[in-house]
Image (cartoon, rainbow, N blue to C red; front, side, top):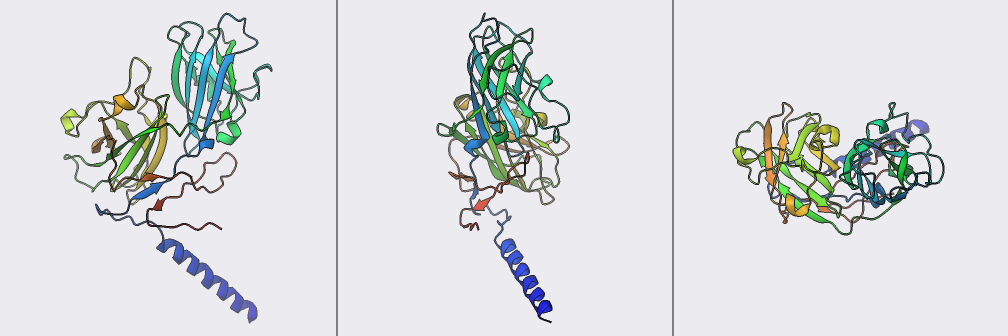
Length: 348
């Protein structure tokens, strides 16, 4: 009898705890004067930087200098950006890899990726192009590893013959202090009335002109898998003036505004979407200001729009100085915690 009573008490306690959690979850109402949501800032340990120099095994014809940055999103895809000068002139589709080495002096080891999550080596498809002796290349990569497991590994840029030319070791670095942010409220385009879209996006630009794009939306088409979102050429949400994807075709070879490059969102059955990713479109803060953000339905049609500006309204999320996460399993993404501005959180 005592055991039965004890079990009943435990069950009642679990039910009460679950009810408390559910009652404290953020409201999903679409009131225009609703609470401002806080989206935790990306952690500094999700950004790695390698200072590049000549690889000791190269004949020494060139003197490469610069940096390679890795910026990780919450799915452990990372935007790899190389800003290096002193390379082989006009090196086209030259190899850019991360190796298992932890220094630049040993013979380059195998490429570094986690075979449990990524059965096919992603690195043979990763290249850079040099204009004269300089490259500003950007590509999205997934290796199955998170930032802490990539830290300390060697990144190598090769010449046209496949010989290691430039090398650096990935180190954790705080690059978030000097950022400038743009904001946009998104709403229905006049040609779309199936749902009521509300929410906001923000783009945080860094010194190298890459940016961290965050969105929190509701009223979108439900269960939308990898739907497109992009910054457009236009500066008005008048449908005829929105234009095409906004990217520098002189700087980049491929349109970065594609799901394969990380530019997408997915919605749940209620039409909510929370998404963040890094991107480089060839333009910086000043050139992007005033352009429109466009969202698409599952069939590709244009449904929502907003204009990027320097001021945020009550519908915009603020950025916390720290990020609350649940410790991930090896090779798995961390978990964001979203809070309303009027909520508190208690951690055990």
